[in-house]
Length: 162
Image (tube, rainbow, N blue to C red; front, side, top):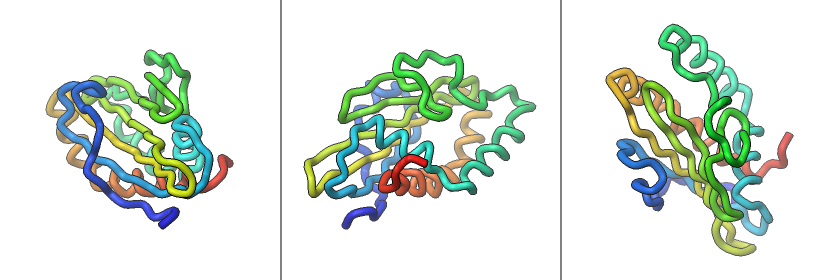
């Protein structure tokens, strides 16, 4: 069914994407005949985020300031430029990998586009490697929010970029 977001078993080589990742999840949406590549899918996810997600990100940035955590990937290596806050590390038309390393944790998002019309699918996989107690605590606190945010963001692929 087009537009329905579902959580799936992750299907990426975690060792190649983020060696040592302790957290990995994946969500998929069917986009039917929509002709999008991985960059377009990622752009739609990031730039179509609902206002409540923007508000959560602003709150997160306020709360982590005393800990010196990064508020975006600006300044991190980004061979493919930035999409929103995310430095693009590698990409093909079918797969985009973005993310950056921080003091507390390293993370990657993988956007995969597969299939042909009328049964194209986009999968968003998130991988996290914690670096210390702060990272493990942070991941524990944000995981429930992450799942809601990831579902909402991948659902935004069906909409044109605002």
